Length: 167
Image 1 (cartoon, rainbow, N blue to C red):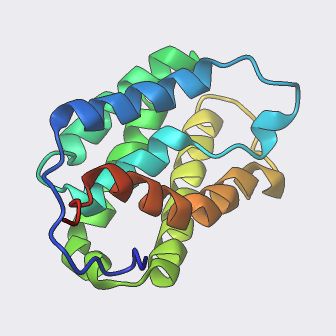
Image 2 (image 1 turned 45 degrees about the vertical axis):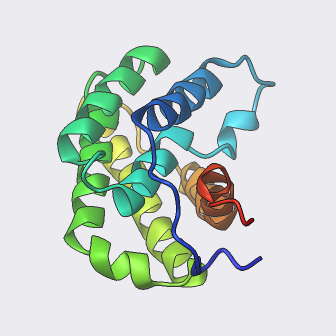
């Protein structure tokens, strides 16, 4: 099956499913992982904000991204507002060109997602730097690269529950 351009109509996406994806992503942030694994794990909440902003722009917009960002700040006990700022800027940039992004193939979308993930990481680093933290090295941006590489897989997985059954 080719998931780049679905030939049949997809079932409508339910709010419960969108909410469940964010609950799972926030729960992944809480998992006790081995030391050092957070150096390469992507920000799954950011990936979902970008995914839903591309595919369901009327449901996940700038305000929702900001609210989810505040929740991510609380869950991860990070500086209050850094995720909210980064997520809302990412959603805004997606929504500027959402109609074009939908028409891109997965490779082109992956490049756009890479740039946005790096930008969101950079915004969070600048927010922490503005209150006295040191600037991170280039390794800080590795999760953005991993997240962009996961974009095609995420897109395919998120489409599976909403494909129409063939009779």
